[in-house]
Each structure stands twice: as C-alpha cells, then as structure tokens.
Image (cartoon, rainbow, N blue to C red; front, side, top):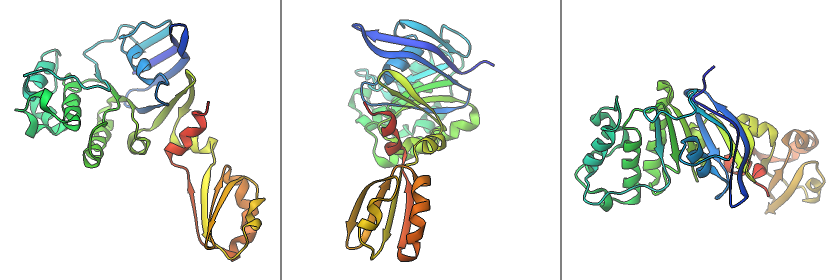
Length: 289
C-alpha cells in the first residue's frame, strides 16, 4: 500500500541536542491528522523534514511513495505568512497558480479562502487574520493532495476560525490529506480523526480521540449532596475535591474504578453530571516532562 505520508526512524538534532528521535508513522490518503506538542517540541521541524526543507540526520520520509517530494502534490502553510511589498492579493494568488501544472481555478480559490473583498489590497497592508486567509489560498493554488498547515488560524477571529475548519472538513470528501498543528485543541476536535503527540523529541501517542480517552480515563464528576466531604475523600481514583455550598466537583483519574464505589451514594445525590476530559486536558498526560 502506498501511503500519503510514510515516516520511518526519522531523527534530527541541532547542536547535538535531539529534536526528534526515531519517529515512525504512516498517514493514509484522505486522513486529517493533528500534530500536537508543546512549543519547541519539534512540530515545525517535523513539517520541514517531511517537505525536504531541512536535512534529516537519520531515517526516511516518503510522500506518496517518493523520497523526493513532488511539489505539484504538496501544499505548505508555514506559521509565518509571507508578504510581498506592492503586490496585490489577486496578483499573489495568480502568481502561485502559475507554478503548477493543474492549478485550482482562481474563482474557486477566492471562494475557498473567502478573500473576494481583499483581491485589490496589497499583501503587506493586510491584518494577521486576512493574511492567513490569503496564505491558505496560495497554499491551495496547486490543488495539492497533501497539505501541511502550521498554526493556520493564528490571528483569525472566532467566526473566521470556525468557517476555516468547516472548509477543511469539506476536503474529506475529496480525499485530500492534511497534517495540522494548532494552538487551539478544541478546534482540532472538530476536524481531526487522528492525533500525533510529540514530547521529549519522541512520538508518544498516535491514535484517535477515543483511543486517547480509553488510555486516560480522567473525568469530572459534579453533583449536589448534603453528605459531608469526608464521604468522598477516600473513594478510589479521586484526585481532588472542590466543595461549595453542598455543590461538589470531583476530579477522578479512572472513571471505571471510581463509579462502582460511588454508586452507593446515588440516592443522596442530585444534579449529577459526568464529563470526560476534552482534548486539551487529555494531551497533558503525554506532555509531562
């Protein structure tokens, strides 16, 4: 089987300091994958290595089975958007289209990135959010099959970010492959079907959100009860308890262990709510030093 992205034993160090060590993963065509990690974890370095923009120390990288990436198949949106003095948005987009054999039609790019009102503006006069939208149009100009998005919504307002992710979701039907980094984990939950987490220069998790939850059964249990706090302190898996006017919030690190012991109090509990951790909290397990 030929994968959209295939990485085997990839390693990179700077000044003898490891940034990535023996990283292995495969991404099928059409997957939307989130790449997560602390600042400085090596996410941007990994994207640069995958695109042959940085020399690797060891390992192999293949894009659709090729060790030398075919630029007609790839789109890359870096963290920092590039501006060109005295170049209008429409000129920048058409310039990008000219680099490819089968570019996406200009009108489709304008609609995709929602930049119709920006076409006659100069790129160096745009706001951060506007520039991100233009950068996305440029990235998609070649109608790529694999797209790398490094913090694509930084600088966008909430509405613009939501609209952006809706459009990324639409690419699932077209089979486009995305590898995305973002400082907004709650947004990635809407689009990503798989998560790669890097910590201490290694890939420490590779799987779905459901798999992440199964491996980390943390949850928040809230309720109202006239019982004393001491009733809940020694229950198994309870990490901490917050109580205010008989309203309790228990943080537990293993819901399956906690529930059997908690059942005996159900007839003395009201307004019970149980919520598992979101992606941001689940990530913390794999990002501990």
